[in-house]
Image (cartoon, rainbow, N blue to C red):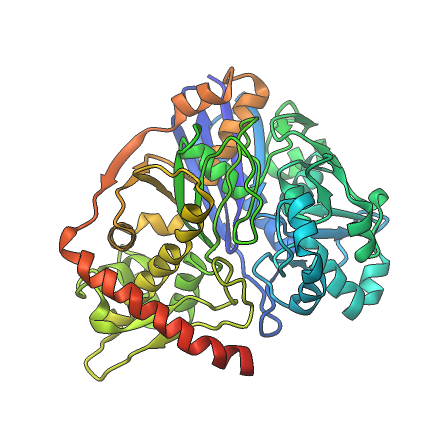
Length: 501
C-alpha cells in the first residue's frame, strides 16, 4: 500500500493528513501557532513557528499511523495565499511574513489605484493591501534596510518546501497574488516590479502545482522521520486545494468556505478579471475559480474565543468539547436573528464588496435582554450576512453558480454555523467526508507521483458526499429582513470609519 501526505498552513494552524492510495484517511495531526498583531491593522507570521508546527505534525502522523515512512510515496504542501517570504543572499528569512489580511499598505495600494484598470487587464486583480506589490512598496518606504536585503521573493508554502527539499521555486497559481505577474503573457511584468524596486532576478522560477520538485533532504529526514525517497510536488495555495478536495472539478461547481477568510468560488472555464473578485486558476488545467472574499470569517470566531471566550476555554479543559463546540452549542439555543443583535466581521477591514481597509467590526443593537449566547450566534450570522453581501457580484458578471454549494473550511464543522449559512443564503449546502486543504494536497501529491492517473481519478477516490443541509423555510423572512438591517448598519457606519479609522 502506498501513502500520500498533504500538509496545510492556515492563518492559525498547520494540519497534516495521511491518506492511502484508495483515498482513505489514515490519520491527521494539527498544531496551532500564533498570528502576530504588532500594530493595529497589521498581521504577520513567524516562519520558524510554522516550520516547527510542520515538524510536530509530521512526527505525530508517523507515530499515530505507524506507517513505514518508506511507504509514503509523495508529499505536497499548501499555504494561505500570497503570503510573501523575503529571503536574503544566504536564503535566510529577512523579517516575519506579512499576512494577506494585513492592511498596513493601504496608502501604497491607493497610490496604485489610478492604474487599477491596467492591473486588472494584466494581473486579473485590482490593487489592494492584500497583494505582494503594495506590501513590498510599504517595506521600501518604512523598512528600507530590510528591503535592501531582498535577494528572493517566494511564498509561505514555498519556504517550507525549500526547507525540506532545497528547491527554491513557486507555482503559477501562487504568483497570481503577486500583482506583478502578467497573466496575459505568463511572465513577470517589469514595470510593476519596478514600482517596488524589484527585478525579475529576485523572482522565483515557476512550475505547475503537480510537477515534482524533488525528494526530501537527508537532514530533514533525520529530523522528521520521513524517507529520502518520498517525492515532493510543488503544490499550490490552500483555497484551490480545498476546492479540489471538495470535488469541485467541473464548470459551475461552487464552494463556500468558512476559514480564516470566507470565500465563495464557482468553477469557470475562463478568467473573470474584476475588482470585486480574486481571480485564480484551478489546479485542473483550463479551469479557474474566481472568488469573493469576506476578509475575516473563522478568524473572527478565533478572535472571539480568545478575547471573549475565557469561560468556554475553561469549560473545555474539564470536558470533552472544545471552546468552539461550546460556543456553537450555546448559539444553537438562540432564535434565528439573535433578537436583532448584529455583528459586522470587519476586524481587518473588508474585501468584497467594499474593498475598504477602514471598516471595523461591531456588535450593534445590544439590549439588556441579550445574553452571551446571543453574541455567539450573532457572530455566526454576521459572517453569513457578509457572504450573502458577496453574492451580487456573480449575478452582475453573469457567472454561473450551482444550485447547491459545497461547504468547506474549519467553520463548516459547526452544525449550527452550517445551518445559519444555508438559511441566510437560502441555499442547500453539501458537505464531503473530508474537505481540508491538506486532503487536496495529498490528492495532488498522488497525481504528481502517478498514484492517481488524473485529477478526476483523485476526486473520484477521495471526495465523497457526507450530508446536505437544507435551508429552514421558517427562517427565510427573519434573515431577509435581517440582511436589509445589516446593510443599513454598514452604510450608516461606513462614514464614521472612513473619517476616524
